[in-house]
Length: 213
Image 1: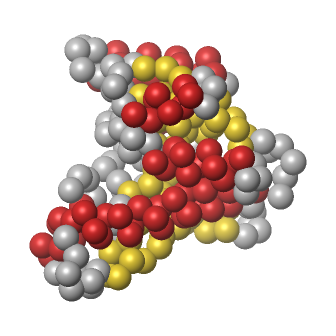
Image 2: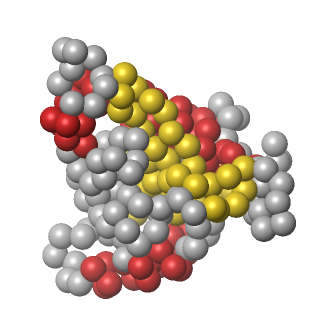
């Protein structure tokens, strides 16, 4: 594992449990990164208060009343660049990023989604999975592109759907897997050679593979 720690920004809209999982993995030495910014589009997000209590640099860029999406994203981008972040981790950030924003950080924005993509993108995915009658659900870490939960897949974890599940119980078990998968996937991207082939991120040496600096 590289001795360099990569500066990351974590974007949240709510309680930020995946932010907490990333922070814990860093503190335990399992993830060669450092959080240089926790940013929220919601001033009352519980995750922002927790980040402040940990002494992390935080910023709130409200999306409500911000005017255009472009204007809001300019402010978000300024905060990220000012903090010196090289990677952006979306952790329950409930905003669809524009193509221009994504292009400013090519293949450096990561998201975790509580379903086995490409099934059930968007919101309320546990209920959608139950309504569809699937037997297996799970979570996905993917690089972000301009679409809705459509970027190249880095890793996935499967979770069995039990007969007595409702959206809340299924969501809790998926969230446990999210907390492990996110740090693992980011760590691999930061320390291993990788390349994109179609909708997948593949790890291993290749002529066009990328490595963290």
